[in-house]
Amino acid sequence: MIKDGLRKITVNEIVESFSNDSSDEIIRKTELYLKRIGCSNYFEYIRALINLGDLEQDRVHKMALEDLGKMSKREFVFDVTEYVQDFYIALYNKEIAKAGVYLDIVSHSKKFKGPEIDVTKMYEEYLKVKEREGDVKTAISDEYIDEVIKDVKSEKSLRVVYGADEIEKSKIRKKVVESASTILVESVGEGVVLRYKNSDSQYIDYGILDREGREALEVGNYQKAKECFDTICTNVMTIWPATYKKMGLACLGNAKSEEDYRRAYDYLWIAKEKGEKVEELPEVAKKITGNKTKVYVKEQQKN
Image 1 (cartoon, one colour):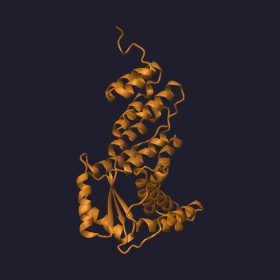
Image 2 (cartoon, helix red, strand yellow):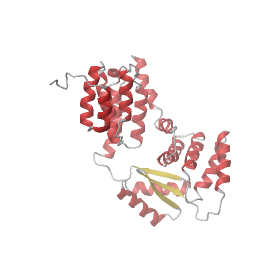
Image 3 (cartoon, helix red, strand yellow):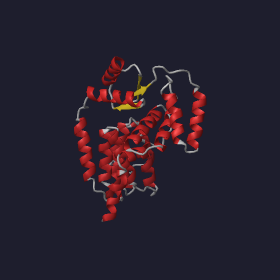
Image 4 (tube, one colour):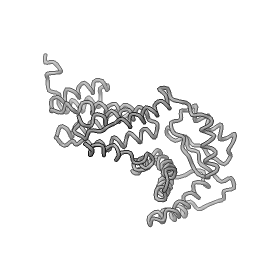
């Protein structure tokens, strides 16, 4: 009988393995397959993508399978910029495990035929967030919830508390009920949305305002668009996902500060979680983090 390490692993076996096997078995067969096609240097990369698939509960591990296919055809090109960007998005969303995987990919960039990246500063920022969050998730403090409630009331706007578990979501609802009758609370994904609603709100024509806001958005009149969508968001109980997206785009078009970009991110994130296709999130996340992606990739130019 031929040992696994000596026999040829076929592409069909890999596809079948990704659909049916455990992650450990997928990784074992993938290592053999990469050796066979002369791409052993990419093993850590594919293993990282498999780990990401596990974190995102992607049973098929789509990203890993797609890149394996490109490698088999000699069409794969590693783009480190994408993963530096993904690292900061994950870090901003306090997705520590995902950020760690992205950091590992970036640190091996040269091995994957990409530029050599100095990840020292990225690693320091990763450790700071990890320590702040702790190995066991740090509870969202009452002080922070009070601060968010105060901000929503004073700005008559919206905020998202990210990374809240069910106990924390319940605590947030309770505090809002006790202290802020003008705030609506909604659980969305792994976040809690706190949205200001006028206590004396009157009937508005949602359709007309939405159309006027959309038309203003199309011609670049972001201030008018923002006013239209803000009127909807502060006077209507149930908001369409598309309205959240358009409000986010209006905020983005009008953004001048980091805080403006954070507001835009909140609206766009809600829209995406509710099923809207939102392509702007990575760009907004880069604005919030000071566009650090380009800084790190630029390190290669110094060598």
